[in-house]
Length: 383
Image (cartoon, rainbow, N blue to C red; front, side, top):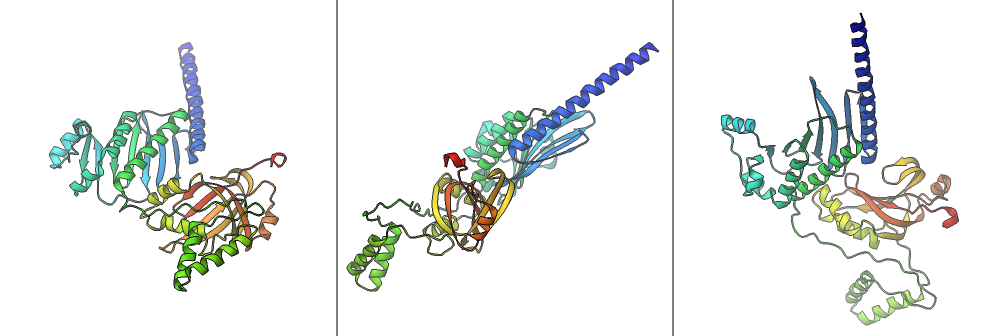
């Protein structure tokens, strides 16, 4: 009897600590999902999943279990599949035997260290070798050094830790490494079709002091020259334009949705030759991210929010400004938050009218063709 009670006590202690550990793990996964700004699902402490879309990737992290064996699987799914069929797998005794039995050919990249670790299969050998440049091979080797298993095809990358990862920092670090590596691999697989024409930086508004003449922008000068050439009176037209500029006490308003807007035209030209969502994001990162904007635009609509993935915790107001259409017909939109002292009724009253935008470009969503500008949120006492 005493032995039976002792066994029950030991079993109870084991169950107690198992449940406690499972709850701690679930809490860590929820924390990791929050840091990654992805969704978290949990079911009976046995199945956990973090998933969501980030830029050109759909990231997924989940626990899996077969019998008493547990592991954590990380997957990056490409928003657009690679332009050719491809399969990569980690080299092992079993894969060698399988390839020999099925008479499959393992393509060689020319990098002996890489070829010893990865099996490459593709019906387009030359394209596969071109894709496996130093950048792609380096990203794949980095994943091999971090994870226990690696496999990739033309739509996704999957890596595995052969254990249940229960630390939030480890989960976040693994996910970010997979994401950055996948981005580098996409750079090799989806190269630019040619040198992209980069439009000149849009001019910043400078305050005009009383009695000072505003400097003409390159766009204004070009317009003047074209108009003067048409009328064959270049000198006369130049003088007339500069007289108008001199008489202006303030710079003219720029309406972003108008075809003649310097900034709207800049954005349309910036994305005009991008062949994929990835190239659009790269163009934004190189040309606009972090740039300050101080413009007047036509407000399409305003809406309140309690939580936003770009602007953070609310309450706040999102304002939407159209930038016009790209060459493929897609609509380009700019979204910004509002100063802390602006109320939703005040914002609604400005719909259909000009409103100011002052802030920095912080993000771009290539799927919805939306630029995000963040207005600094200062306390009224420090504004």
